[in-house]
Amino acid sequence: MWKAYYSVSSIEEALALLQRHQSAARIVAGGTDLIIEMERELHPRLQYLVDITRVPGLDQIRLEDGEIALGPLVTHNHVVGSDLIRRRATPLAQASWEVGAPQIRNRATVAGNLITASPANDTITPLIALDAEITLASAAGERRLKLADFYTGFRQTALRSNELLRSIHIPALQASQRGIFLKLGLRRAQAISVVDAAIVLAFDADRRVEAARIALGSVAATIVRAPAAEAALLGQPLTAETVANAAALAADSVNPIDDVRGSADYRLEMVKVLVARALRQLAADTQADGLPAEPPMLWGKNRALVQAGLPRQITHHPDTAIVSRVNGVEVRAAGGQQKSLLHWLRDEVKLPGTKEGCAEGECGACTVFLDDVAVMACMVHAPRAHGAEIVTVEGLSEAERLHPIQQAFIDEAAVQCGYCTPGFLMAGAKLLEEFDQPDSEQIKYSISGNLCRCTGYYKIVEAFHNASKIKAASDTG
Ligand SMILES: Cc1cc2nc3c(=O)[nH]c(=O)nc-3n(C[C@H](O)[C@H](O)[C@H](O)COP(=O)(O)OP(=O)(O)OC[C@H]3O[C@@H](n4cnc5c(N)ncnc54)[C@H](O)[C@@H]3O)c2cc1C
Ligand code: FES
Ligand code: FES
Image 1: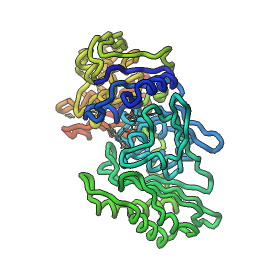
Image 2: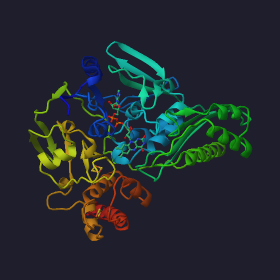
Image 3: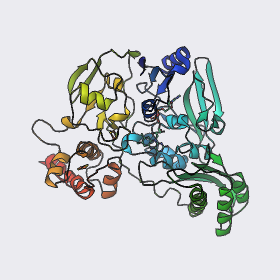
Image 4: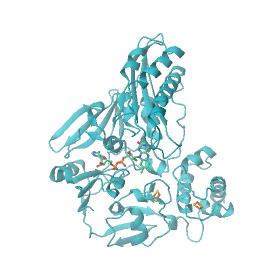
């Protein structure tokens, strides 16, 4: 239970609050790690939450003097949608694409991923392979350090309690360099890495390796480099023999554990497989394969960028009313500040259409639009709704007319028990804003964060196809 939830209007306000409350305060970015950790009572001393998601400009990606800089609100979807990062920091784009599902990627930030510091977190591995640095800011000033030096042990970092991660700096890949990130998970979406690997190589004019950085995730207490494998590649062309040798040496650098996702032996074997595969792709210049050209984002017309900021800091206490626009109507709720947005909508606003399946961001049943962006409502603190525009499944239809995706679900009989349906409808409505006629692949990506326990996926996908036809007919009619 927090004592105060601050929505700040500037970085300076956030730094002043961290300075005042020290280890009793934490930054809220996407909240996708923090909300679960608070639920599991992993932060018993936490009393003050400092939400930075309304500060404009922190979601920018910039290239300056050969260095790409990411602000602390750059989400995984911003990375996936950035042509600059796809071309000049390819392994990071591939890693962000592998995180969760669209609704998670719309809120979850790269900075939050780095701070949580799990060895299975996807963006740490590519950023270490890319030799990234970070700037940490406090009220007293800033310091810059190598990302690799930021990690001091299992889930331990050098972040001080009065600091926030201000920016991430990546040396942009040069013409002589290529990079790749590969992840092995237990399924294609919403899966934590069993093993992941990122490799950045520089080649000379004879296509021999001039420089090599290999980083491996989920195989030790922190992300590790593979120095023997890197050294073995230097001055060599990427032949079947040098690739196999480097892959075997990479496995010598790791110290994996047995856990529910895989045994240590399996992980050791998979390190060899992933490193060899990654090197082969780099040799063939096919490293960017697998990153879709036009992935669905479900992020609305403003691409989930912060629009007008707050005029001043707002401080929420457990008894402060939340005032929001829900489905076009102003709502004022006196209670429920400590809840998630999902429970606030259901219990306080009395809109039960949004469902709770998992309360952990895994099932998509709670999908709503927050400021035009599809998000998992269970992964958002209720005070974030203050001053926000929210659309729930109850707000999808216009007047008496069903939304094309609703009509298509009826026409295709895509509903069985119906519990997952609101979440699928919300994902489908957002997809249709982005693509007039999404192809099957795009439809499947768009619902990769939505689970149907009745497993009615065939009809759901058919309904998505049909919805685009209904929409086209109503647009022309
Ligand atoms: C369903 C689901 C699927 C997921 N799948 C993946 C996955 O496939 N791969 C993966 O790597 N992760 C995954 N995650 C984990 C999570 O989404 C990511 O780690 C995410 O990038 C965290 O970012 P956030 O903005 O949500 O962080 P938050 O939860 O807001 O913050 C996380 C931590 O970082 C701190 N923090 C955040 N920003 C700053 C800052 N600028 N300065 C200082 N401290 C800061 C917070 O105080 C908190 O301690 C998943 C999570 C869920 C719920
Ligand atoms: S994703 Fe929110 S309830 Fe399952
Ligand atoms: S229709 Fe029953 S869970 Fe999807």
